[in-house]
Image (tube, rainbow, N blue to C red):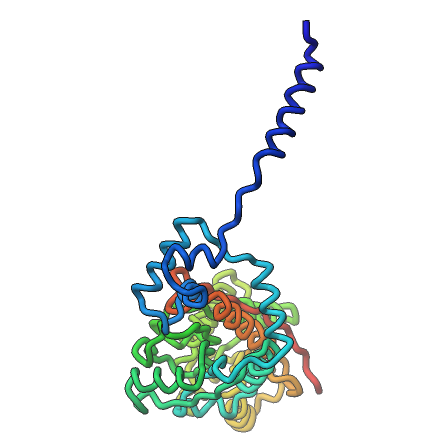
Length: 356
């Protein structure tokens, strides 16, 4: 009688023999896809990346062929190609556009805007892309013409820079021709990935710091449009803090008329005031001089390093870098048009104490 040990030994030997005789399944290649679709290998590569210069029907045929043979790009080849691109400047036809609007006057003076744009530009150059700074007027030219201009300049990706005003960007150009990332919430009606400050965390961080130091009457001064620009995070954080009983229920106020701001200050007597940097100068001049409030601390919600006031530093240079990396990755993967499930990447800010 054959022992169990003998049976197991024979079964193991049979499995080893079978494995040696059965070659591993061959991985489908780009050449296989091209052959099945009846196109050149380069055409197949462009079609799989949804490049608009390939006709739609050809793209669909190539993508169907890829699915039929279970083709997937080799990640190691993609990584090596990325490293090669980093080692040499990309051609003039490989550009990223930093898109801004000429009627956005505030960002010209906004340190956050400039720090983010400079960081994004530097990161794009590090990854091998040339930069096109595009400043447009919404009514400057038809969408088809603007799309043609960007394509002729070799633009493959668009980074929408921060905007103060909310605007419908859906008809600005043919977005399906480009990879797109926004560093703002205010580019509306676009299903795109975004990289923005974690506004809710940032305001709550400021509120917690002020509470820790004994302030209980914390006011918030904003401007018309600020709440939409930060996806209503300022209101939400302050309302939650007040609802928890950790600060007095002082309503927010929009900085429009000096008389209204003075009346708000007299009625609610805030012992600390949260304010965006762009309104800081006017608030200080109005409230500290006319109301004689030298002991009331102003806390800046988008602090620029080097200021003597306290506040939240939103790390615009990190936001710009992340946005540029995300856009470069989308270009390399051939991801154009609107994302099916847009993602929002939020970067947490840090508390900066007084420099005085």
